[in-house]
Amino acid sequence: MKNIIFIAPPAAGKGTISERLKENLGYVHISTGDMLREAIKNKTSLGLIVESIMAKGEYVSDDIVISLIKDKLNSLDGKPFILDGFPRTINQALELDKNILNLNYQVIYLEISKKEALKRALGRITCSCGKTYNLNVTNLKPKVSGICDACGQALRQRDDDNEEAFIIRYNNYMEKTKPIMDYYIEKNLLVMLDATKDMEKLYNDIIEVIK
Ligand code: AMP
Image (tube, rainbow, N blue to C red; front, side, top):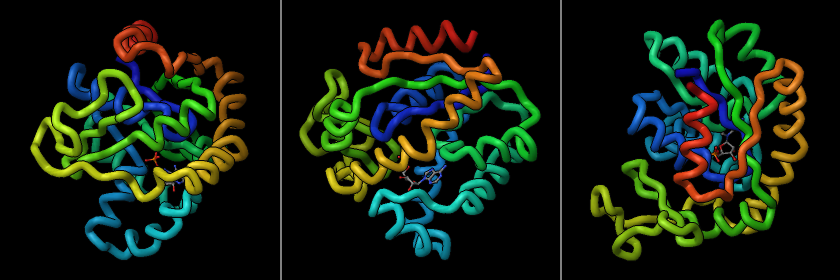
């Protein structure tokens, strides 16, 4: 099984598909967004620095996320991993190759239109246990409205899942993250898949790619 890097516009479903790969295949799911939200929840000094930046939909600095990722990757003991939300800038991609990772990986680009991504962002509700649901995606709704199927806690919307923050996130994505694709295309490491496909089909396509 190859290590995976997911690149996609905001709310394309990287986190949901990563969780499935984690549950079924034992991948370690590394989401810089989750790590930063955890820091905010715990009110750490990092959390205090990034809270307003993230709520607005802006990117946090390369230095911060690179240091988070370095620590995490160093603690993996050779387990296969998924990078969800890193790298997001060309600097982060270069740093990953030069100074962090000596391992093979497959880059999977999940394609989705801006309109569909916005719809998904506005329908996304999350639980503090880590589960994510989506009111605008078939098969991703919770069984009981507003309640987590897995742990029974109340579901909530992320601070950056509103239209205003989404537009900033999407613009940042187009300006800073999408250009990374060329870097990976040149290295012959990128595969593009349709994020709007039925979840089952998308999952099977990913399995084919990472075998
Ligand atoms: P995500 O959960 O991947 O949608 O990320 C949520 C937010 O966390 C982003 O909008 C950024 O503010 C921040 N973030 C996560 N990963 C990165 C990264 N690699 N570089 C910069 N900011 C990031």
